[in-house]
Image 1 (cartoon, rainbow, N blue to C red):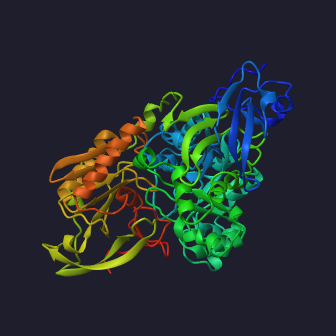
Image 2 (image 1 turned 90 degrees about the vertical axis):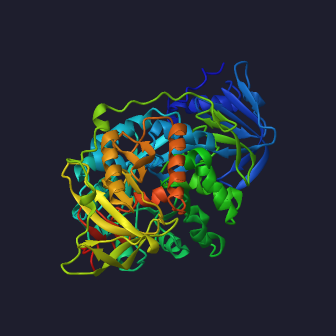
Image 3 (image 1 turned 180 degrees about the vertical axis):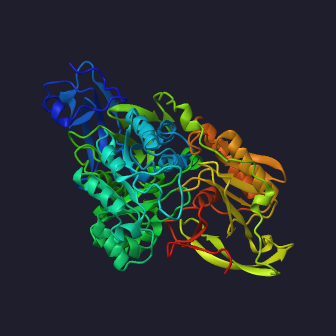
Length: 605
């Protein structure tokens, strides 16, 4: 007799505890819970596609993979006919931030499960910058009750660049040591303070050492194009992977040094096509390359997909389908020391798999997690209960005063009629910015924007401690042609309020509106609210369904286009303008930051 069908909300028992049961099913002494017949087995260990394969599952794990599983079929066994379709391991996202989806872990899972994602490795450093260790714990505990595998990387850099920004919280070496004992912590999140690693900063060295002692994986983030001694020092410090490469030479350098090259395709980061040439043209071993998303907003998840989108894109760049799937399954599992749990359709592993009708386009018909069908035909097949966050997590936007248009005035040096200023230059589909300069007019002692030359104003409004502080600067690349302002409490990584606008009255309205709703992103034009996505949880995540958030996000994107912004996923670009660990020029609550030298610089040249 088979066991009761496995509950997907209950993690499978450890292999050691159910091995005898798996053996009995494989030998035909016990009936399986589920048998999938006549599939084309995408074997990521051997790199083969094996036709006419049966798979038997019990206790949420694979027990038998072979030519005939009829011996494992009993009275209570559910039998699924794959009818010659492909059996593909469940997809893994090796590096991502749930908060960038604008939704909770629960809603993120609801959105991505139909797209074949059954394992995620999340770094909640966004909520950590607002709520500290307690915020990490909230997302960790939510991740533990999901019907798919959501592993958590302990954030390493909160704030991301000490001395160059002030976040809402700080994490210490002691915090990292504590978190390494939590159930679902898989390793250390991306170590963004790469100068700190190279200079043996005691906090960075301490966190990395604590992770090593715990036997867990250290995530990397080397955002500099310099592959000289600072890069070598960073690798020697311990990070094991990196997703910040944008060139084939970046991927090659990382793999040669024993790191895993993570190639991302998010909502606004398109780094696969250039780096995959290290495999398709230079012939490097694909086992050391991993696919991920990093940042995907809700609109991308609902409309375009998740890891299935990344795998399709990799195939379009010249990878064989099996190799692309390896980079999103087995390679990821091996990197996180989970090869005997995840990443393949082989005995003992968790029964996470897809039934796919076309491999090249990765047309996913059905999704199974822990041996239970969780999605079919692009629709979720189970109910995932909502997860409640405490009230304290929803009261995080503290302005300290009413923001006025005058807060955005930039006074010119005395007597100047024209000034030369530093300008943050947005690069479409990439995280880095350019350090630009522009000559701007001065009227009544105040520096003017130049809409014709696409130079508008950017401001950072402090929101964690209610200081009322505002830092002003200039940005280029959004192309706004109308009076407007976009404000967001999602401002990686310290998550103050970033306001970008062509009209100071709209900028003030936008900032104040976020204070009223507890955070999110809002667009004002000519005194009117045009689009709003409320994100009251830490000012980073909505408490609504993913579909509702995606619809609001789409209205926001359309409104930005109507203002003249043609950038792909411009909101994602907007949200990174305060990320003071990626070159070249950024804004923080400290001032304008040159990330090539990690120093504050004057706005005026």
